[in-house]
Image (cartoon, rainbow, N blue to C red; front, side, top):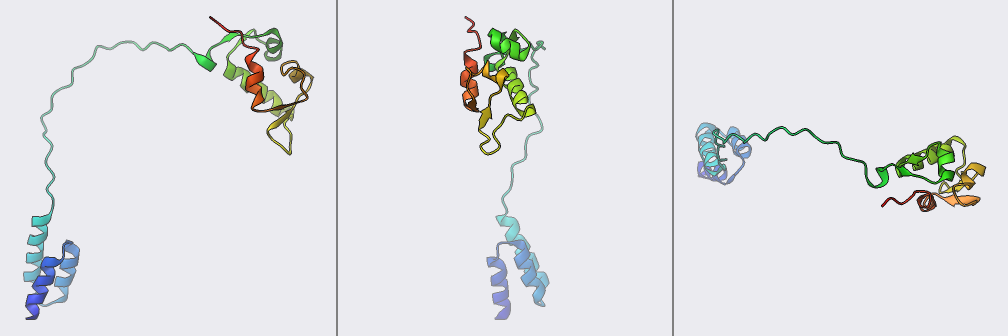
Length: 152
């Protein structure tokens, strides 16, 4: 009767490791292990084999890559004379202008220590930011927009 329950446990156990561990505990482990292997091999999912014959891809003719022109905020455009004196150039992109302004602010320690979102303007920055004493860092983009000449 006990061998019947052992075989029944082996058939119900789906993982092979559990059935093999149960089979190792009993004396008739060889017969149980073979029945457990046959059960797990029948229930295992078979993965379809990929075909080794594939169609060769059609080769496209090699075209040289063209460099893309900068556009949007990366486009170099003419700037106002006031911003030109600050940057030292007559043309700049918006990203370059903002980078140079932030480098100037950080090198001259013009950021408010208590509120990092405020920038104290010195005489050089006042020429760009309409003579304001303090400017918020979100206002910089708005105030710089008038210094960039619209290109049509």
